[in-house]
Length: 226
Image (tube, rainbow, N blue to C red):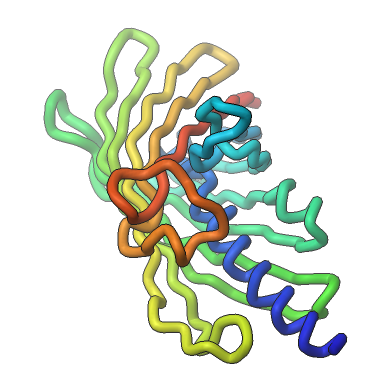
């Protein structure tokens, strides 16, 4: 029974980890200038009905990034909500700028990410690769920017809870946001359409979404520059 519980728990936590990870806002879209370092806190998640209101799931995350080149930024993050459930979940990756924006022509960046998860209850480790591509536009004297992009999560597991086959290995997330830039701070507002290829019955709770697929997410982020 204990072995069964651990297996089911781990499969459930794997799904939570994918949702928590993919439900986090984009870590960094525009590469930092060389030598610049920032720290970020994010809050928000998929929209749900609670006590008659529509609210985002209160997911919390923290991250830090450093610009190694003007077109290459490295970052790492911790999912605090997963940690509360006994799962150490971290992510690490880079943001590579492919081109800078020029008026109405957007800048393009790509971001390969490694998502690592350790469940202390089941004693299991998992790895989820991720690949994002974003287009962004600078505007205003403070160089604010807005963006749209596609985040791609990949589940390499072959089975789900109770040995059920895992038939969906790709979880796409469509994202759009705006970053308001100040001298020492940045403030992010982001909207996501999470897992449009998943029906509501495949997800953990009935999220708010168009039709019966996926979930709509809303997030805020605060970044401190150093």
